[in-house]
Length: 361
Image (cartoon, rainbow, N blue to C red; front, top):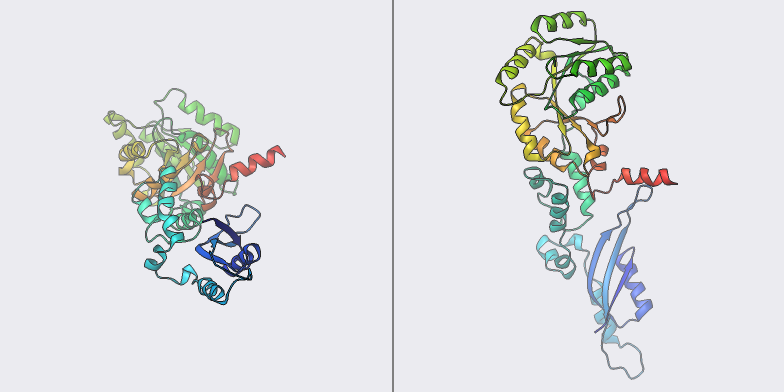
């Protein structure tokens, strides 16, 4: 038996098209309703695909008999899948052949999304629809964005994170971003241990016209805070911690205890290229400071940020900024739903590919 596939904008249109192509002797084998993906400048469109075959009938005149027409009309009244119960829907050919849940799980695994975020995104997953669109909508509702920190930042913004996570570079970018909004900003670095640390911050300050102070001791920090008391925001750069260096950890804790906690936000820098388990291990070193937000760095070194989103959801700490390069003060963006989707594979918003195509035209 030979099968034919017909696609049209609706079920009725598909049946009519099949009749025109193959005659009234067709029989419906299966039906699948779906929506086209669309693109940046095209909208999603409903489509219906039917698989049909020609009934084997004995005809003297070569025309379809009344019985055949009656059977065809009965099959043509197949109900819309949306009107069926879940059990009825799963018992149809089209949905048994193309379940959505495995496809959704596969897409999440490809993006390194783990539980409990993964479980949240596939909870009561629908039986039909566009998988990437469904997951995108759910992700936007679930991912934590630190909008409060973007709009109403506190007086002290303390950057914490391991050495090599892009902490100092990100701090300089963020400080300049807030300066452009008209705020008066200053930078204080507590890192008097790493060779060249102060020189690096000083170079950023000089290039961005932001005053910088070094405070390696408690009295120096108090002096710097007093010096910048009239400033809207003071950005505090810290040294990277090591679980083995208890003395350095205690010194940093002592210095930060001088700040007014009610006026302080702690931002943890997290490299997007780091594995989730490694991020969790680093987080343990800074959890006592109760980070209020995350600055996700080095987006240019990875294809997906599912690992960071899984970590953020697990520890309940929202994302404040994203950085994707070393250029200061460029290569930074406020966290948003569009930036999140842009860095997820197969989620339908591949702006990086679009920009690359535009640049070639």
